[in-house]
Image 1 (tube, rainbow, N blue to C red):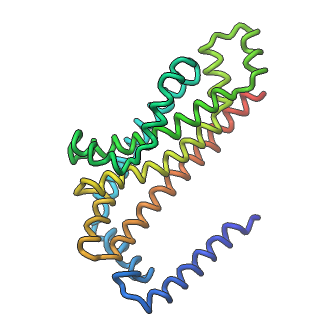
Image 2: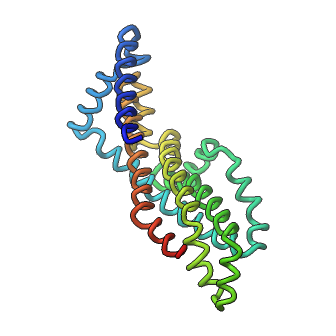
Image 3: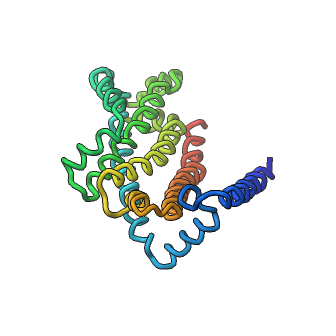
Length: 251
């Protein structure tokens, strides 16, 4: 098992070699070789072309994740604790998530303009649901015996929530955050596809218009790197803080 990262890396190298060989027999417009994509990526980074687009997409992702995640978490606390609110609002939440966000994006552009706000709103809306769903589930399925113990010790509802339900449900909440982090990239890029002149999604649209496929692949690689870095950041946060916090609850 210790050698799995090495095997995974070797598999990546093999896939790159196969891709490079296959691309030699195809037009660069359809499938550019990895060497050409890497050269385009390196050139764009050296010239500073990608930097404002990376910063713009990162800002949209982080702001959307912050607002969507925070609002989803707080709404889930209310729905998890107060049954009437859950029964009243949850059908509307499900209905809102059933609508494809790509179909809603033109409306958000119309309401909030072509600036960053519309992209942040789309991203926040996408990030909202994973946090809400996982947090509500985590709170509802907290160990009943431990809840009874807290009640017998005279703990208030607020203390039970703060010192038992949220810490015990933290693995599920973090799992929701991991999903939200990945979906945040999708939200920002969808917004930039519909209406945006800056950001990696806008670069992809522009490269399609210019028929510059290597630039399109280079932008996709940057989006992948951003997504993986954010995902790993959540993993590090979980290992460094969350697990230690939940272990203290189990004692």
